[in-house]
Amino acid sequence: MSTQHLIDPSQETEFDGGDLGPHGGGHSRKPQVLIADNSGGALRTTQEFFEDEGVNTIALQSLEAAKLVIFFNIRVLDAIVLDGRLTDDEEPRDRSGYDLALETFNQYEDCPPIIIYSRYDDRPRFDIDWDVIPFVSKDQSRKVLVNTVRERIKRRQLDSQSGGPRSADIPAHLSPPYIILDAPGGDAYRLAAALKRYDIQAHTCPSVSALAEAAPYLPPAMYIIDFGACEREEGMKAIRSLKESRDSFLPAYVVALADDDEFGYDAAQSGADFFKVKESAETDALELILRMSQHAAQLLQTRLVEIRYKQLIRHLRQIRESGAHGMAAPIKTVELTLDGPLLLPEEQLVLTALYTQMLSIGEGEADAGTIELCLEGAEMLANDRGQRSDVHEWVERATQHSPNFTLAWFKEEFLEERYEDDGEEGDN
Image (cartoon, rainbow, N blue to C red; front, side):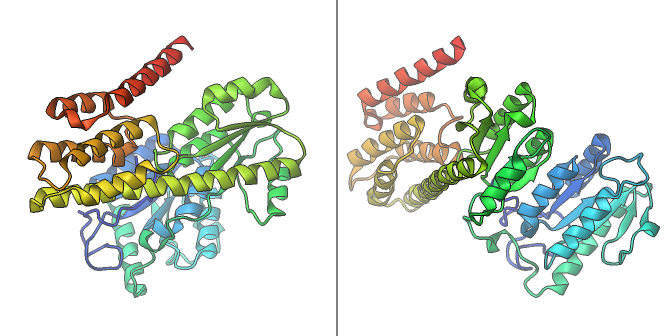
């Protein structure tokens, strides 16, 4: 699942009833609907029904995860479906879904439509305009729910000249947020207060499970895991989950905090980017701010690299389709990328192979096989920076096609480093 913007405005939609594109015209796309239900079985069934109807969904089981995902993605959601009793179906006093609906509706201008979907009709207990926040009973067919969502999305578009704000309206680089595990035994309150003194609004999440559930749908944040607020294994699992939830171009930065050095090894083994023994809240906050500035700079660099990879693909496709001679444009893009910092070994190898091949072509004409191999290499980089691709296999095929695709010494150095890494992992 993509962890970049939740909506791709270029996606086509099978959702009938008019164009649901970014501004009511042009390319259409599938609507994006958030569904929150504490019953795992009901959640899966509802999600599957929406997906069958041509709707993209974000399915969440906890109240805390829903709050985080809504906060960070309110402008890219087309609708929100909430279980009325989002914490405990059997508790008549549970009003968490209703409270979240009201809180969300009152907090955000041009809020996406919110629908309460519940087995229990608790409406008499709430002073809510039920025409604004409709109720659908779970005793009704799910088709009724889908039709209600469809009608509300269309009504919102008619009410808004622009069709409602969409992902294209969101700045590409907002400052990465700070998200702190706030559980009993931790120091989230003091740390958040210290950060606020520097005009930083930290967000908290009360459980490891909710944090892991929400993470794939959040921006590239700094996550702060306090081992004093969770069990050792739970903290390690949270760190691994957070690191794995992000893609290569939008990595999470995970900080592990503890009262002493005892947890340093565990944090490193789990993949934490930084481990810190807690001092005062003020000192810890300043250290985190410094680390965040470095993380934000890295995000800008990886974003720039991603843009250049896409640019490289466009150049190569233009050459393929037009039959043009020369590699001047793609060579320049590769040179600029190679000159940048923070490249992974896989990226260095593929870029170097492309560069030597392109230099050998110069102003001449590349054969079709060479262009296809160059495109394949560029697409590997644009997809995941080469991390999950078989770079070695691509290099072998490329050098069999043309020896100009790589420098022998660089290839050997990369493979030696890769095998050493694999061996170390096997020893652990």
